[in-house]
Amino acid sequence: MFFHLFFTKMNWGYFSTPQTTCCLGMKNRACAVPRGKALGGSSAINAMMYARGNRYDFDEWVELGNPGWSYEEVLPYFIKSENSQVDGDPDYHGKTGFWNVAYTSPASPLLSKFFNASLQMNQPIVDYNGRKQIGSGRVQFTIKRGKRQSTGKAFLDNARQRRNLEVKSNVLVTKIIIDKTKVAKGVEFVTKHKKFFVKAKKEVIVSAGVVNSPQLLMLSGIGPKDHLKALEIGVVEDLPVGMNLREHALFPGLVYNTNYTLSNRSTEEFVKQYLKGLGTYTRAAGIDGIGFIHTGQGNRAPTIEYLFVPPTGIKTKIVSKAFNYNDNLSNNFLNKLDPQRGVVIHLILLHPKSRGRITLKSNDPLDFPYVDLNMLSEQEDIDTVIEGIEFIRDIFQSDAFKKIDARPLEIPVCKELRKQYREYWECVIRQMTTTIYHPHGTTAMGPDKKTSVVDGDLKVHGIQKLRVVDAGIFPTSPSGHLNAPTVMVAEKIADIIKRKYRFS
Ligand SMILES: Cc1cc2nc3c(=O)[nH]c(=O)nc-3n(C[C@H](O)[C@H](O)[C@H](O)COP(=O)(O)OP(=O)(O)OC[C@H]3O[C@@H](n4cnc5c(N)ncnc54)[C@H](O)[C@@H]3O)c2cc1C
Image (cartoon, rainbow, N blue to C red; front, side, top):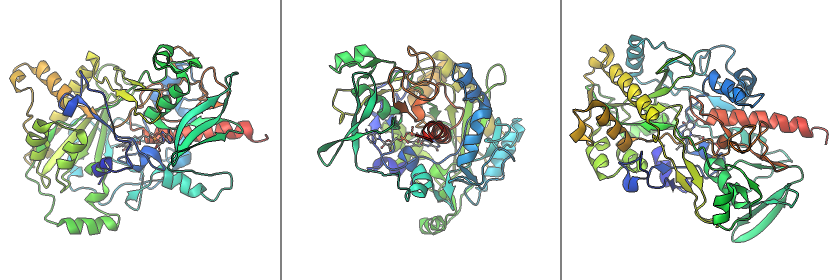
């Protein structure tokens, strides 16, 4: 049901602006930008994969002038929130946190083929959240007995009884109120067509996510001054809010039909299994295997992630719709994948050089902001994706996949360029690439207010008693998925706040 969640009221339902360098095979050249609208935010609609990133990612945050964020210093916070059921590396996993992390069960029969192919490509089988990330592994999910554990369920449900917590839902925060001395005083919100003001005794913490936190800051006068002036918003602090939008580009074009058949179980049987927390339907988007490689020079964080999707038994029409594919890609590509026999390996660009931007459409808080992804605008990104494609095509050439007669689906775009290898793949990538729904960086952390929005304690530069705590603060891209590092950030800031106010 993962892709079906896109079409419910739990998704804000954003789309990017029409793109020129990516999303070209989508209707209106726009990629979908789903964002969760529920307790737990996007973790209520995400694919539940638990992937923290690489030690070098966090060490780099320190190199960029953010003390306290090295891997050694943040690892305890990853461990703190986790209740791990996986057979991972000792010393890297928590067993007493609120957030359950587990494998789906049973593994797909094809997972061993994926592992054999990986080994043939010199990719060891690893706990990718453990000592060594580069290699292949079984996906760790934020699930409990096969069911979603959003951060709402894992953390808020456990804190519901506390007297110092009040949660208001169906509320839209429209403005942060900041006084003349640049101190945040509280927030304005609307619910049922009425406006309210809530006063902060200590601080305001904005966690509205990578699209809405910048929107809220800009509506409150914190943002690039020219942009704010153009919309007649009084400038309180000139900061690069909404800039530096990074996104993990996802290339979903490596799709193969095989002679392996999932099973002749009926949908009803699959659903019955699912209700017991078991089977194929418990795997979000069908994903079972994961891996990381480092292309290029040096041996730091991985540059490419790959996700192995064995046959799911589910028709792919909904995937085309969720990707917003145009009629050509919908009818002539994904819909040709045999749900019983088709295998996909998705490719993810982990450290994009390209930057997009969030801007306000107007000064009306009810207007969705513009999301300009601008993915693949740097040639280096295209080159890295091509290297990743070569690696994945080699996986499919391995003995393990030859044995099940894996044959690529014909890609129905850019045919006229087929004889020019690089031009062909560049064209295909720009047509088919979408996102893995990992925007970040729009309120980046850093010491310099010209290039960042918050400091190392996530306090907004130039404003007192105001913090941003969400995936927008990542100064660089984590080499994994974003939910785990977002929760790590929240755990760490919770500690800083507790230390600050313990005796006040
Ligand atoms: C479809 C999808 C699949 C994903 N798959 C994975 C995955 O498998 N693994 C992974 O690790 N990550 C995944 N992610 C990414 C991950 O879920 C997010 O990066 C993470 O949840 C970001 O957390 P956040 O706190 O920054 O923002 P969010 O989780 O988006 O939370 C923001 C919250 O603020 C609320 N809000 C916004 N504006 C306002 C306002 N003005 N007033 C009141 N409330 C407001 C929103 O409704 C939302 O509840 C996925 C995301 C999506 C959308």
